[in-house]
Length: 452
Ligand SMILES: *Cc1c(COP(=O)(O)O)cnc(C)c1O
Image 1 (cartoon, rainbow, N blue to C red):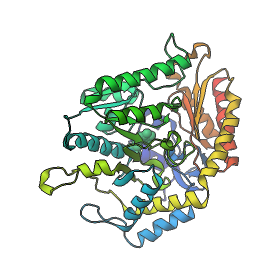
Image 2: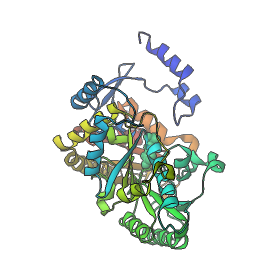
Image 3: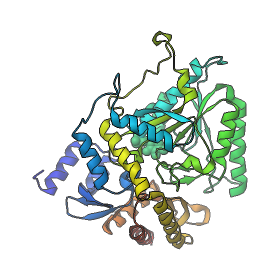
Image 4: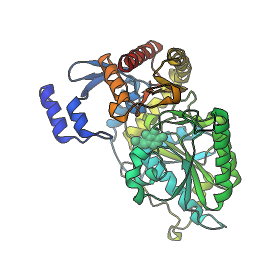
C-alpha cells in the first residue's frame, strides 16, 4: 500500500471489525499496524520495532520469517496451494499426520484436520457424542459434557458450550448445550473457609463426585491440560489431570485434551499431557502447530474411536463433518518445517533455559504490593494485579489496569496482551534468553509505572 500511515489507520477504523475488541476504545487509541517482521520483532507502519512478547497470540514458535519455514511454504506454493481432502489427499497432510502420530502420546493414531482451535474442539465434541451413539453394545446415548469452570475452548457455539468464562460466554447462554462444570484446582482467591491445600482437596472430591454421580450420561470430559490459558494462566494442582484420566477411563468417558494453547512446548514438554503420563482419547492441536504461520488445526483420535465410525456407507456411521480448507497443503508444509526445527534447533532445551530465566525474573515480583500472584508453567506466565494485596482486592474494571500496563510496555517497545488484570508473558519457545530479559524488563517497569 502506497498510502500514508494515517490514511491506512483511517481505513482500518472505517472497515475492519477486530476480534475481542471494544471497537470504540480500539479506534480512539490506535493500535500498531504491523507491516513486517524479523525474528522475534514486529515492525509497524510508524517504523517502530516491537518485541513479540505474546507470540502473536500464543502461536509463534521459532520467530518470524524463519528461512526454513519460509522456503517450505515457497516450495509448496510451487506445487499446489490448495486442493481438497474431500475425496482426495495431498502429500504434506499425509506426512504431517504420520509425524503428529509419532510425537503425540501413544495410541493417538488418527488425525482429523481443520483450521482453528475452535474447530479442533468442535470436531472432538461431535466425534465423542457420535461415538457413544453408535458404539456397539452401548448402554444408551450420552449427551452430557463435563468441563472446567472458567475454561476457554474457542468461540464456535459448541466450544463456547464447554467454556466457562462469563465475560465471553454469558450472552449466548440460551444457545448452548448442557454441561457440568467443575471448580478449577487453583490457589488464588480460594473461597472463604479454605486454604490452598484444603481447596485443592475439595476440587479433587468434586471431580470424583461429579463423575461417579453422572457417568452414565457423560460423553466426554474436556480439559485444557495443566494450564487454563485464557482464564488467566491458571495452573492446576499437580496430579489433577492424572486423576481425571483415571476416573474417565474407569467409567468409559472419553477424555478430550485441548492442547491448543499448551501444545508445542509451552509448558516445558512438547505436549502438556506428557507431564502426567496421560494419554487422552482425543487431542486438539492448533495455534503453535504451524510454528504460528498459517491457520491449521488437528484433532487426534484413538483407533478405538475411529473404528466405531467404520461400516457400510449406508450404515449411517460416517462422520459428516469437514471444513473447506481442511488439510491445506501450505499449512501442512509449514507445520512439517516447524516440527523439523524443534529437533534441529533443540527448541525444548531452549524452553528449559528460558523458563528458568522467567522464574528468576518473576521472583522480583513475588513481594510487589500490587501483585496478588505470579503463575507460571514452562514459558506461560500470568501476573495477577491487585489493588490491595490484603484480600487480593481487584482493581475497578473501569481502570483497565491490565490494558494500561500493555500500553506502557508498548512504549518500551514490547508487545504483550493482558487477560483482564492478568499480565501475560507468552514468549515463543525458541526466543533467546537475552530477549526474555528484555520482555521481563519491560513488563516489570510497566507494572511499576502504572501501579505506582
Ligand atoms: C485459543 C484457544 C482455542 C481457540 O483457538 P482458535 O484458533 O482461536 O479458534 C481453543 N482452546 C484453547 C485452549 C485456546 O487457547
